[in-house]
Amino acid sequence: MSDRAAMAKARRLVVKAGSSSLTTPEGTIDANRIDALVDVLAARRANGTEIVFVSSGAIAAGLGPLGLTRRPRDLATQQAAASVGQGMLFARYTASFARYGLTVGQVLLTADDMMRRSHHRNAQRTLAQLLALGVLPIVNENDTVATDEIRFGDNDRLAALVAHLTRADALVLLSDVDALYTGDPRKPGARRIEDVHGPDDLRDVELGGSGRVGTGGMVTKVEAARIAGIPVVLTNAASAARALAGEPVGTLFHPARSRRMSTEDLWLAHATTGQGRVMLDPGAVDAVVRHHKSLLPAGVTGVSGEFAAGDPVDLCDPGGGVVARGLVNYDAFEIPDLMGRSTRWLARELGPEYEREIIHRDHLVVLEGGL
Ligand SMILES: Nc1ncnc2c1ncn2[C@@H]1O[C@H](COP(=O)(O)OP(=O)(O)O)[C@@H](O)[C@H]1O
Ligand SMILES: N[C@@H](CCC(=O)OP(=O)(O)O)C(=O)O
Image (tube, rainbow, N blue to C red; front, side, top):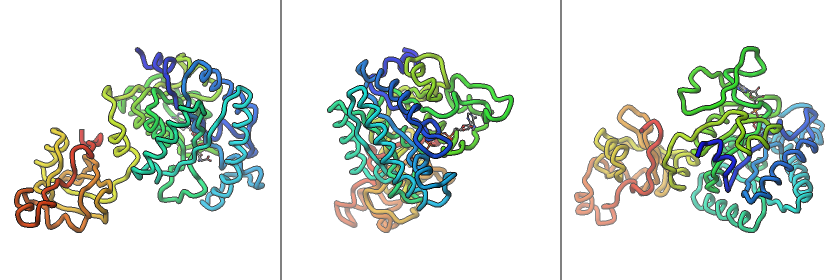
């Protein structure tokens, strides 16, 4: 099945709309555009497809009511605008989907919810239950509590992670441009890119910044497409119906990997950040990256950062490049005493509890640079 056909046949779809597709330049909700988009989603839902909708626009929709003429730069005012805008946005969706007898559920997530395994599982369960109950979940970042350091900021990566979380078959990113271009389409000479198969197709592409109200521009969309691991179409809201029908609109990002990674691997690779680093000798790099073995203390040459057992940590090759990430079995301060030792020696000298690996292979994922 072609990736376009996969879009048309998807049984579970994540659709993400950017701020610019949902709000007016005056900083209010664009009710007509929301209704038009809801018409498309409801029609697809009526065909039996489960849809998770990721909607930006909380900050943009809060600008007008607060008398702001442009997107504020400081986090506190962004959060105030999001607090005002999110409620209005969701009220609008509730009314709009009700025209089709559809019930919507609001799901606000933080980057932290994606990073902590227990929160992640919880979000996964909630979304699954909403879908099982026939509810259409509408997801946004929980802007009012997100801090600068741990913010998604844009919703493109969040949409890709939600696609993982829900094991969606395809992802549609709706923006104010109808496709990815070779350069910013606001400048002359930019050409539309129809298909992206991998990094080679993006080599000469200028990934510019965002529009007036959006965040991240094309960089975050390309990144989202890369991490989604499923067919992704990028187009504008006006082309949403055609994109969902598998017609050749926008830009289609073909998934790079044929084998789907497990949910935990996807989570580890894309939703977490290493809380510290563990340095490996060449033999350990080989064992972990090529042979997918557990990381044993004997192959560790150094450690940095403050992490606790259970945290995600980055594994580095002797050149300092990150090759893998895994959930570590020890606190950072314990590792120097174990480094370079065989598990047998450790068990004999320190006790049987030290026989465990630094990272078990079941909780270890090789990152792209390490392949
Ligand atoms: N190579 C490119 N192809 C398409 N659009 C681009 C490119 N470079 C920059 N852009 C700009 O990215 C903007 C969309 O990004 P953004 O404002 O973050 O959207 P959204 O709010 O939908 O997430 C477009 O308005 C476009 O002007
Ligand atoms: N969570 C934020 C998303 C911010 C944003 O600009 O996202 P996007 O328009 O998708 O680039 C909001 O709802 O305003």
